Amino acid sequence: MRVNTLSLLTGAVATLVVAGCTAGTSSDVFSSGGGGSGVATGQGGMPAQGSTVAVADTSAAQFMSGTGSTGGGTCNATAEEDQDGDGWTITQGDCNDCDANVNPGALEVIITTPDSMGMIPTPADEDCDGTVDNPPPATCDDNIPIDSIPALDGARAIELCKQSTGPKDWGVVQAAYVRAGGAAAQPTLATGILDGFGPNVHPQKGTRILGMSSGYARVPGQMGACGTQSCNHTATAANPGAAPTGFPQASPNCAIDTVINDDIGLQVELRAPSNATGYKFDFKFYSFEYPEWVCTNYNDQFIALVAPAPMGSVNGNISFDSQNSPVSVDNAFFQVCSGCALGTMELVGTGFEPSPAGWNDAGATAWLETQAPVKGGEDFTIRFAIWDTGDTAFDSSVLVDAFEWIASGGTVVTGTTPVPS
Image (cartoon, rainbow, N blue to C red; front, side, top):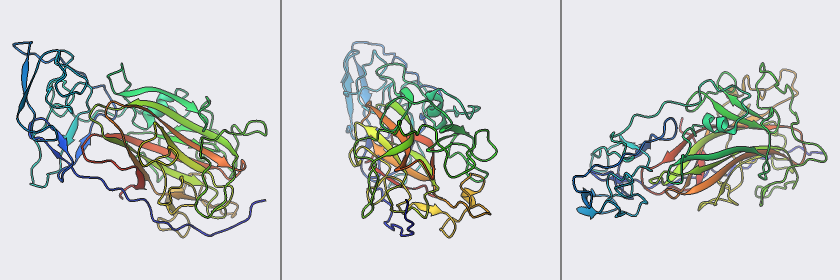
């Protein structure tokens, strides 16, 4: 039997410290000093197309390196030489073999913020497609139906649009719906490609959000909506979930059950752009566990499990609070509820709103942003997963959206903070 408690953990949210950056005046080379910030525009839409550099003498070419991390001056490279060590030669399309941040496998970066000297760096053609500062790509998640089965549609809903076409091309390598432990799963009512979550919660980017739930990822009025606090989709006595190593993870001074149920996840294998230093995404967590079941055995959890695990992750999880705990009702991110700082507007029409009959109450986090570092060109996986802990009751849901690559230089520190309002 569950025991009520209203004691809340009040730990402060994790603080991210991101170093500034400056860009080279001619080639957009980045260093870790103070300066402007860049916007990576290749997170979705059409692939960046590389082009072979035309040189009069194909035996060698001379490039200006700019003033960034590769230093100033010029360098010489033969057509088959990889002078800057970025994995691309002139013959393969490297349009500046003096700058490791410029090649057909790079992400276009648009810098609009002045640096410490008040200067906006000269735009560069990072992806060597012949166009300086390609305009941001169109969204790719229009008109995806709520019950779409392909996992690539789930990836598109969070702006993971570009698919990798080969070992040197960045983007989505593959995607699959899985259970929390990685076993294959079917996209039942536990997943949904949503155009919003009630009337007051809208996509952070594009026109769709990926919804996943330990119940049903639907709102009232949609076919298959749960209508109560507890709906099951995979849980039976003979079919509990297999939690990833280290999970469920107890919050400090709280108990936690070891059994998980109704677990569902989206796993994406990604190849980072050659000039990427990190990535980020937004999410929002809802739960019927709030507030009665705070700091009990039953706290449902959401994680973003990354392999290989980046520096700063906790058991591979990159979405956690200041206590290094996974996102659950135990942390101070819960600000959407009756009596909370953000009130109940973002519960209205979601199925998590207070019932006039008083049979349910619930809460949610604000929109949160997780970021983590990555090595340019690296292959890695992210498993976004949610589950019921200890039983199959009092469901939780998560919304995931707005994935972006970070390619603006500086240091990316793993952590989660509220999205600025």
